[in-house]
Image (cartoon, rainbow, N blue to C red):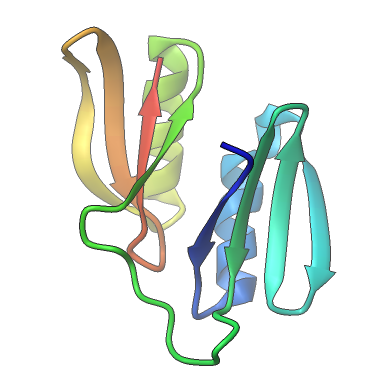
Length: 116
């Protein structure tokens, strides 16, 4: 995959949530326009965007963005941080099959997974 984009209805709140969530990841923040923000790493690009068609952003039921974060400790840390930033728990950190993972919803109700 080249990149992933999720919708937002409040770019300022979205930037605050993801800036804090990704603060330790060493990602570069790029603002190509007023309606879109990217967080970019060597082999990673994630963005939030206000929809181009100007209709409200909605989350996809069944849609999820997964982040491989490297360790159980990092899964727990990011899950807790996302909740403190106003996200909502969709599954506490736990061993699920071969992966230790946790699930949250961001401020726009987009579903995220953190796994080791």
